[in-house]
Length: 211
Image (cartoon, rainbow, N blue to C red; front, side):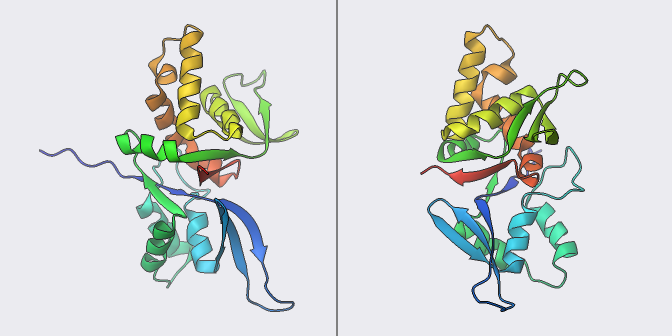
């Protein structure tokens, strides 16, 4: 019996730059997404699909957010729209990418991309010392494990995802840690990829290619 191929995560690439209205009083508008040195002007259907790739508020905690998930969500948010050519275009343009955690190709993706960090690290609390908050002063937006918090914080360095995972794994080994989920960069990368969609949805991170 063959082993089923794991479904890939669908990840959005680029940083949202807001709406762009080209003329005074015109109904025409675009949503701007920066991807590396370029800024893409997306119409409403294409932007909706890019936004849906961040996941949705009703996503179940353990649900793997995939191309299939976005197609289903598009049935609700874009009724009557043929999304297949739009999704193909976004994938071809590099605004969406599929990545399978635990696959060797995930390391190649991590070497070629970086994590942009937004908002402020708020630390943990006496009530929940095992969770670390990210958000605004006195307004936490998301709570994550210490491992994901460290990865989020290190994203500000501008290094690739893979460099960050290797650095944090080395720090853990140097401090005497023996938990392989913390000392092996491949396992750290898997943990980050599986935890990304809540962070993307909350806009505390974005993904982009390395310069």
